[in-house]
Image 1: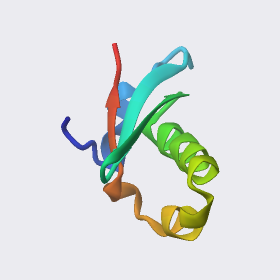
Image 2: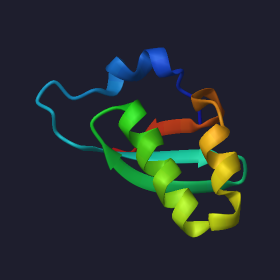
Image 3: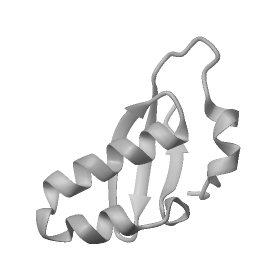
Length: 74
């Protein structure tokens, strides 16, 4: 999977506002989320990961967006 820089999010932004499915990975953990942009996908992945790993909440929220590898699923 190729990491996508946050500045490249418009490449996967749907002009009609439709939701896109993304695979978001940070370290050895990944999740699948829906979003309108890469930023939405990272935000939703943070929320899900915090729910799955509550003891890691502070670390997950402090991670820079560049640490998340995001790829659209077709």
